Amino acid sequence: MTRRFDGDRILVATHNAGKLEEMTELFAPFGVTVVGAAEMNLPEPDETETTFEGNARIKAVAAVKATGMPALSDDSGIEVAALDGRPGVYTADWAETPNGRDFMMAMERTHSELEAVNAAHPRQARFCSTLVLAWPDGHEEIFEGTVDGTLVWPVRGALGHGYDPMFQPVGHDRTFAEMTHDEKNAISHRADSFKKLIAGCFG
Image 1 (cartoon, rainbow, N blue to C red):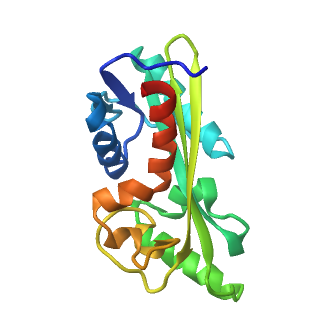
Image 2: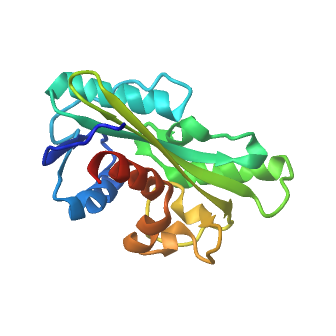
């Protein structure tokens, strides 16, 4: 049995404004107020694990220890089939620059590496999202979501964040960055893991 969440505030352990906005919208129908890590002045812990679950756990547990509040963390990324699943957990690292994250640079690198191995079209990829909900007593619930798609080049769309302009989900003719928030939130990897979280802990 999964544990039911019965509070009205949840700490989302992310400093990513786009991710926080998505979570706030997803939680809105359930009357749960989302508090971000930056709002609580929490440092960003080093993500030293090699799996989405491991890194999500690091962030959730660090936030719980710092605040005493139940904390939800998401670790997500894109796995490209022709690149043996890379960048995967290193998706954000591929975008790191001395001046912050540059996902256009990361998408250009991904395209260049696909070209270098002469990857066949369509170029398969999937977004992955693992949610870890941690309580102060050490209890954890873990939910995983994915969405399959293909990579497009040149990139398309100005909405969304991260790799959204490069990713076209299966069954659609637009990239995530060409969809509205509501359209993307209905089918995304985070929506998939979030539905499982809601069914398990809020339903």
